[in-house]
Length: 593
Image: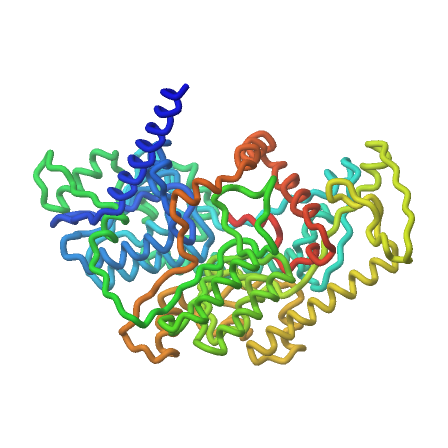
């Protein structure tokens, strides 16, 4: 037994030393040789921020880091300056895309690379979906497999409605809201879009599509009329040479033919290996200038929540904007004398109205001591706009979804399920008239509907929350409350539309927001950017692995399209207080493709 115990200790120590060694080797500086090509493998989903890879990921075979906008932009900017890098190769491989604004910002980085460096970009793929083609359209040469596919179809947004499914279970949803366009509640009370919701979705889809068409048309020298004609023709299902003839692509090559053309571009002899480097290689080889004056870039990404969720819907690796940790991080930035300005990168559909108010307050305290600039990513809507509205300046991409100024409460009522289907019955003794407001509950599901008096109290509570919301926007943006109410009402706008409404100051990306923060802080060109919150060490993240993640993944696989319904039931029934049932949020499932 002693021998086995000693062996286990020794094996554990060897494992730890091996993992640390692998981690150290991964972070070692990489040299980039002359004649190299930056290869960007477009696969999976494009996230906002790079996730730290642990050696355990490598052991499990996850050697390819997930795509992240911040890392790709940094690598592209460094590649433009590095004389040893000849150009960029976009390798299209099962790319799932990202939000329109995230894709737009990455595409802008590629356009800037060509303009600033004079270097080339080439793209190759067996199949281009619309997101992949949008990015690849900037390339000097777009090649596709002769048996491949190019999908160019326009935009659509589909919603799933759970009303009838919930009725079959014996569950109804009680809704309290302010805002004609506040459509987050519609999947639980309707079976199709309301006219107001259809109006706003049509408006922002057309705005996003107009931007995509204009950018692709400029790169490919195609008119908007021609691109829309091709979108209507179901080009994905036509012969590959039609995409070639239409000017969407430049060549039909098998991979070996494309590699041969790339060698020719690099003036390499046949059989000579092409020197590919990854984004991580380029970043590691870059010279970093340091300055005592810092601009902090704080990433506020994900759902705004009062506390970190657990159980179904709490997927390992997903980020949330949790009230207390966020406030503590912002307080640290406020007290750090080296931090001269803060850029908050917001990519959030919103969430808890109460949590949004607390974070808004902390941002106001930060703003009182140093400049605060907001950079909106794919989403900065509802609660995401709430925390943004009081900043010194707000930047957004043309295709950012923002606004959605509105509040709603959504509380399930399961009396039919619990009493008629399950056979549970409830009785109550109380000292005061409203002591049992909402009634008894089982697993978070109230066993009775609210009375008229209780409902009126909740509606008034929601209306006060909306009044607070528009007051924050009015003060932060210098717009009257009546004007905010007129453009509020829960309506979603694109960044392009929000400019004219005064909700956003300027169209621009994260780099533009950082430059503005430096200007407000009077730093000139001498400053260092540092990102927050800091990544946890991989070994700490390993210890915090959630037990529920495996169970949740299995539910996702088995429930398929019904998973969002189960997930939403869990999210709606999880809160322990009525305050936590009031939301400033976009619809739970907004899909644009």
